[in-house]
Image 1 (cartoon, helix red, strand yellow):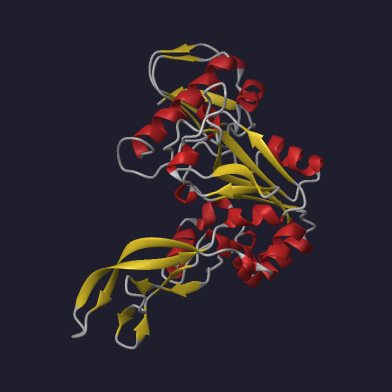
Image 2 (image 1 turned 180 degrees about the vertical axis):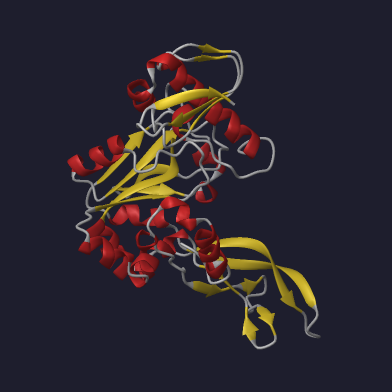
Length: 317
């Protein structure tokens, strides 16, 4: 899903890279809708003379975007019954994790999501909780300090189940929400916005943007499923350049996970291990595919790739 501001650039990038080996007809570029923003006085903001400043309507806009862009109709033609969805820059994401999709389908869930135990009350991820008898995701910014720090009799966080933005939907539920997308609640985000002053000169002001969130549809599902996963195996968000949730920490977590995979498959490495997604998507894949001659110790960094025969082979990086 793109926005009008980056749609053309995104399409050119994919074309320049031959759609990363995928068939061009299997990729949809879906511009989301835009909403005007206000300043702190409640007035509309101009981007330029005679043109309103607008911003994307949030990831909740994906329901309408997939419908309007033809992706839902295409999925129906192909006989697709379920959609896998994720939105966070998470280097440990298991794309269309078959175990997760299987649990989702077998349970009859309309909307399933992965959760993990929060590191503490201040971790900035939404919380899955029961509100008025319905399962919902409560955005961390909508939680009061008292609620976020509430603990049970054992001293554990009462609201511990953090959503990591990995979802599975029944296609018919996704279509239903696309038709009712305007019913999603609107959230406010305060961000600095480039605009012009009364003389037409560029200035920056505090703006109030309006967004919808895809997880607000959870309460509309007739049946949902939450699957708890291990943080070290499935969640390494990249939000910052350095420090917590950064490029650095993401790499460390990915290397650590791949080292565990390699060790379980019989390969020992003294330094970093990187597994190509073409070679394996999980530890079980690597155990099955790693060539016998690769099950040994390596003195330095190791790259595990797929060979033409479909086997996983290791080489010193």
